[in-house]
Image 1 (cartoon, one colour):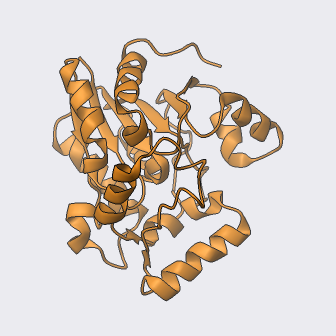
Image 2 (cartoon, one colour):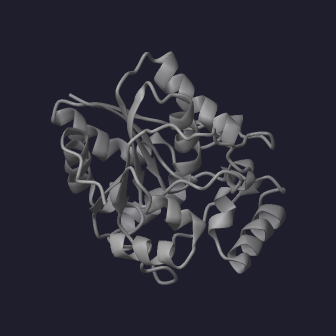
Length: 253
């Protein structure tokens, strides 16, 4: 039996992993979907000072405060920052960190730095004009405008994401992550959905610092072709894949 802590990305709460958690529990595993400070049912806790450190502390409390050991920490999308920080702080309790269509940012870079300059400017505009300067509004989740990222989602999924999604505290997007030196040797697995492992290698060869880390030593790789939200589009397959990763990690490289 493995112990999973499942962390959704921006705008979503632990509810996003309900089907995946049910699948893991049915297979005999322990599953803990997490809602981070300031979103979903914790939206009332949103404040300008909520940042990456806040969300790292949330996960440390779930894992350390809950007495969890040998945790498989699953980070979807923007949860990469909080999960990376928590794994850095708790290497004795985190057995593996799984990046779901995501990856760790190098020390000193924020989540917003993953985007091109034009996209970063647009995110800052949205926060300034629609979020009071400290909230990132929920996107429209329009499949006509973004068919690649929203692949596999039906009308019900999209409606739930729009209805249950809540604005994201912008400090979690703009605060860089301070990481220790040397980095802890926590095993890492990438589950690639909207890109391939070959894409990672090509981006790493091009000099991209984010993908360079993801192509480095200590990684294992899986692919689950679908859109960016596989917990909705392929929940049963994702649960089975996570259970397999916990039991038999893929060969490194």
